[in-house]
Amino acid sequence: MIPFGLLVGCLMMDFLKEISMEVFQAPKKTGLNLPFLGISCCFILMKVMST
Image (cartoon, rainbow, N blue to C red; front, side):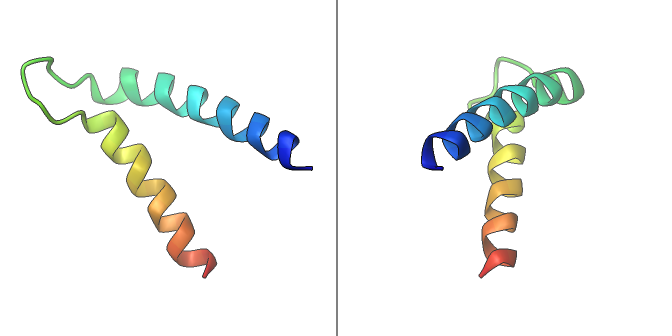
C-alpha cells in the first residue's frame, strides 16, 4: 500500500510542477521559486485540514 501512495504522490508532483511552471512562469532572477512555493502551500494546507 505504501509504494502505491508513493507512486501516486510522485506522479501528482510531476503533474503539478508542469502546470505551475506554465501558469506562474516566474522570472529566473529572483531567488524565490514561486511555483514550488505554491505547491508547498497546497500540501501544507492539506496537512492542516487533515488533522
